[in-house]
Amino acid sequence: MNAHDLIKEAIAEKGKFDSVYWIACGGSMIDLIPAHELLQREATTFTSYIYTAREFDIMRPRRLGEKSLVIACSHSGNTPEVVEGCEIAFAAGATVIAQTDNAGSKIDSGKWTTWVYPWGEGVPQAEVPAGISLSLAAELLDQQEGYADLADMYAGIAEMDKILPPAREKVNAELGDRFAKLCQEHEFFYILGSGPNFSQTYGFAICSLMEMQWQHCSYIHSAEYFHGPFEATQDGVFTSCRWAPASAVLWTSAPLRSLRRIPIR
Image 1 (cartoon, one colour):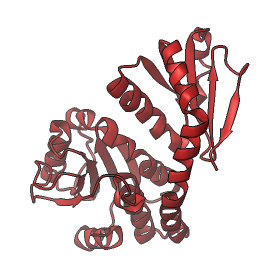
Image 2: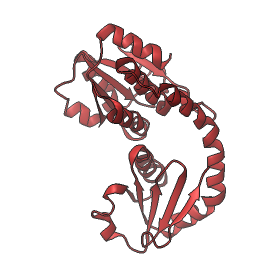
Image 3: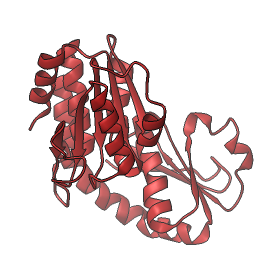
């Protein structure tokens, strides 16, 4: 299965789409956000929306129909809200593409196209939901409007396989012990980010810290930080910022006083 053929077949069957809906929950939604933001920024003839699946189920968009493309993701394949969202979209006549790691799960029902992806150490970025979703978005953009950066998008996704392993090693070596110590010292974290990086802000907060570490924290859009949350920042609050892709930034206690930038490339 590949994004180019999948989008080509979908357009051949239904014609050009006028709307795209991305639906998932929790960790699975992290991987859809950059693709949605690509379409929000670049698309001129169709619109893109992203929903946590329960909101989609309860607040079904009125324009959802045959000219809609719904792209869903459930790692387990059995997330009730996501499966229900696919059923709602399918009943409305929308084209549904689901992603899962679990072949034969509820979302892999045979009613719609299901992209079963591999998962584990060493899987290329092009074959996991973040890469798949970006590829689907870029192909849709190119086949419906033309997208001059399509080749660069594919090259960028492939480049991540070279960048991420050494980046992880570098960050772990330079920051691992310091981060572990800060986790022990601080009861509450602010996680800041914006743009495509906001997906990782959200994911780091709700999955890595809250779900896996039982660590109290709040994810905040960095553009909103100085419009409210800043006033509550005080000693004892650990703030982690996810900014430009070329760097990771951390500061603790009073903002900006002890800013430390750590390049990862």
